[in-house]
Length: 322
Length: 271
Ligand SMILES: Nc1ncnc2c1ncn2[C@@H]1O[C@H](COP(=O)(O)OP(=O)(O)OP(=O)(O)O)[C@@H](O)[C@H]1O
Ligand SMILES: [Mg+2]
Image (tube, rainbow over the protein chains, first blue to last red):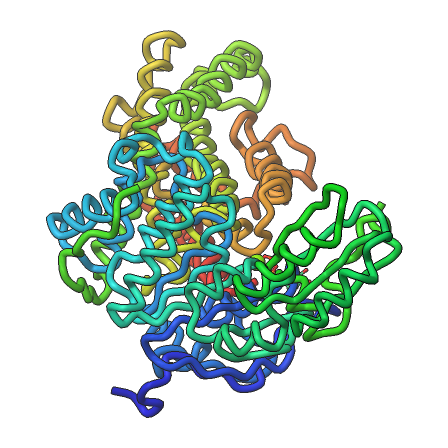
């Protein structure tokens, strides 16, 4: 089809400055067709900037990007024909109904009036908006807007779909539906670029995760690989007193586990690979700790990813802000 | 929420033609007015207020020296109001455009395969419809309540209205250009307001040019609105010449085309 063949996205040294701010530096990545790329990063990491550059909304100040085989700057129109974008902020006409928004987009994409009606009705059904379809968008809740925005982006079956934080602000049910829709689109062969602040989301949806920090790519790879680098789940026990610590530590080490104890907080942390490890931790604590204790299991969070990859705090501590 | 159903097959549309783009985008703006008529009512009220105030306050001007003999003030005022009202249609819609460019639907339209001018032109076309309605209202009310009796007859008044729409639509592109470059609704509002003031008042709209100090007369002469007002007034008074109308149209078309080109460039410019 095009020279790049099976690459939906290819960038070389893409950077973007806003005055003195380097929003993005030297981003080089390639995304095979039909795969899902997860862009993971905190506020200000450069996710939106990268998405906007790829969606032709903002030119890079250095480097080049090709999307669906076309240069985003010189062949913007060709790119725009093949993509759809759900930006971070819902891009809808607030003053008309949800259905009219979808009709507008479908018609502008080139659908005839009847095809537009059919596709709009189908998307409303798919995104559970039929009941509110004929209400003015201004009266929609935040989650409904996001759903409508996403629905509009799926009209016209884009080759590459950009979703900038598509589940921020959605309730859990709507979040899962959005995930299902992304999975469905990916199965149908759509290339999806999705930015998110949630490792869990990137883990579930993405074939490849790209971690951004301060405008740079700090890690790229399949979710499993990335998580392995970060470390797995950790069982955390808050012990009421230090009395049993020595015995507990010894017992855990005998089980082949690697416990760490923080005497300051009275917290014991044990990396666990699976349910068996967790059961062993619980058994050891039951045997050696007389008083009540708290036991919880934490998954690696985006903060852990950041800490392990960048060795710098991901966000300024609250105290410093105040 | 329901599970993902079987979609109706791949769409693979290839972008609407220019005609469809304009039609669909204009209809969207007009539909918003139908759904919230308060917007329309508020829009109509401004010029009616001006009509009331000026016709009552400045009516005695007709007896001032330098005022064209035998002309009633309301007949002098209405054509000017037609032009200034038509011009101000774009004012409000430019502020709306700025808001929509930030995080509204225009953000989406910019990532779609459209001719960038069509978003702007569609707004202008919608303004034209709204403006037509407003001018009709002004003419009817002026005739019924304020004794507007155009010497040029109803035909002259309607021709003045049509001319006002064309002139206003062209000059309104100045505001659209501001919106596309400034991209900050409050700033657009202030700058457009600053610009509107001299365009309306440093003109022959409310007082005859003859009575003005020399430096102001010079300003009036470079104000493109002046030519439109002059031609519209001649049409209403029944003394229009094809030359006057042609000059009015040519001046505003020149301003309009220049401003439109600037506007489209600004619209395409990425943040
Ligand atoms: N138009 C702009 N002008 C100036 N600076 C900008 C502009 N857009 C983005 N930036 C800066 O670029 C950096 C990256 O911003 P970006 O919006 O890409 O982050 P993000 O990862 O999407 O963050 P968030 O999670 O908050 O959406 C930030 O420091 C931001 O302040
Ligand atoms: Mg963002």
